[in-house]
Length: 311
Image 1 (cartoon, rainbow, N blue to C red):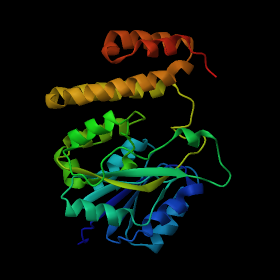
Image 2 (cartoon, rainbow, N blue to C red):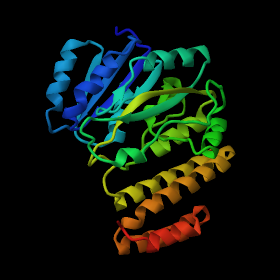
Image 3 (cartoon, rainbow, N blue to C red):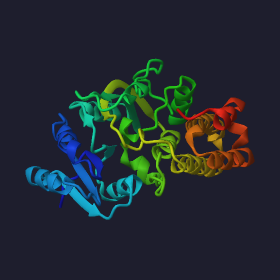
C-alpha cells in the first residue's frame, strides 16, 4: 500500500515544454521531502510528455495522469481526485517555487491548526524580459497582519479592505479535509476560475494565517491567459464566477456582505478591461450589467466601457 504523503502537489501541464524542467525541479528540490507530485498531462501537443516521462523515471514521488485536453479547471479537479496528502498545493508548470515553501507552510499549518495558509509571490524575471507587462502584476502585501490566526471570512474582509486579496491558488496552501468536506472544485469551462475557488476556500476555512514570504515566482509571458488580449470569453467567465458566488451566498447567507464587496471590486475591474471589446459586444455587456449586476457597478465604469478608446 502506498504510504500517505504529507502534501499533494498538483501540477497541470499543457504545452509548457520550455519551462517545465524548472517548474518540476523546483518541487523536487523542496526541503520538505514528504510529498507526492501529481502531474496531469492535459493533452499536451509539444514535447512536454517526453519531459514528464524523463522526470518520472528519476523520482518515484511523481505520478503522471494523461487526459484529453479539458482545460486548467478540469486538470486540477483530476489531480484532486487522485490526491491523498493531508495538504494540497497547486503548482503551475511554467513557474518556480522557492525551496523552503512546503516546509514553512506545513509547519505553520500544523503548529497553528490552519485550514489555509496564504503567502506572497513575485515575478520571475527572465533575462530576455519577454514583455513589459510584468510591472502591472504585483503580489506583495504590505498592510496584512502576519502570523495572525483568523477565521477565513474575517481575513478575507480585511484583505479586501486593504486591497490585498489575490485570487491565484498558487498563493494558497490548503488542508485537504477542507476541500473534501466542502466539496470544493474548480468551475469547468471558464477561465479566471481561481476567482471562485479562492473566495470559497477563504469563506469556508475556519482558521487561516498569512506567511509574509514571496514563495512563488510567476513567469509573465506573452500569450498566456493573463497577458492575452481581453475577449468576450474573459468577461463571460467573470460573469459566471459572479453567478456562482451569488448561488453560494444563497446557501451561506452569513457571507452576503463580504461577497457583495468582492463582486463590486471584481466586476468593475473586469469591465474596465472590457473597453477593448468590439462595439456590439460592449453594448451587449452594458445591457447584461444593467439588468443583472447594476447594484455593483460604478457610473465611471460604464463610461469607460462605452467611451474609452482601445490603445
